[in-house]
Amino acid sequence: MRTINIRNPYVFAIALLAVIILVDTLSSGLHFISGISIVAQVAIADIVLAVIGVLLLASLHWWEKAGYTRLIRIHDLPLFILPFIIAFVSLTSGIVVTAPVQLIGFAVFALLIGFTEETFFRGLMLTGLLPRGVNTAVVATSVLFAAPHLLNVLAGIWDPLFALADTSAAFGIGMTFAALRVRTGSIWPLIGLHALIDFCALLALGSIEITAQSPESLAGSVFIGILLMGYGIFLLYRKPPNHDKH
Image 1: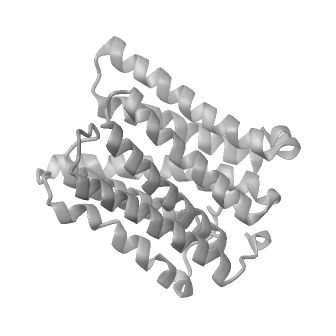
Image 2: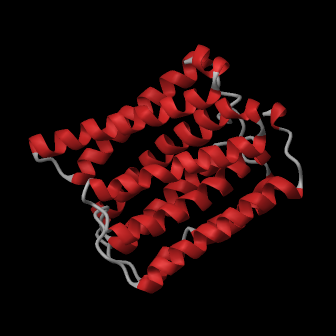
């Protein structure tokens, strides 16, 4: 992987995405063969991907470069206010999950997804693409982060219109998160934010299997995507980042 990254960072990023899709596809096969729940299927896939991500980080010696050795700094806290607030937007439609056991399960599930996806997209992919330029790396990883959300339609667990709206939101989240990683040098706040966004969504929806949503909800997802895309651009251009220090 180190050789691939040095020769062509884009191939490196696409290879990482291929690993994600392959593991997700195999876990889907396990779901159909064994009859395990969708949640168990996704959890198994993310555990496998988390292990692969950690092994890649270790073999590439990218713990520092990918932001795992730096904690959030106090003067960076204001940069996280907007995405932190947006994380709770899904709760405006109400909370359908209140059972303590289910709350704990969703929290662990959300943390697992947050760690895995941030490790691959803002950890490995972004670090690998930064030599091609900060702006290019941010946009490319955001596209690669958003695109797989459409696969949930093929898996039959998301309504098609919701998948399109969520993909636009995911692109905006990708832009903001990648810009924050470049600006702050730390990936840990992004793991926490990612988990918080997913946790709130699970509380509001009650499941990872999502049926048709209201036009207002779909429009809201698209608006959030546009807002966070703009915020990501603002973070990059308001103060030019020096990624070499990270």
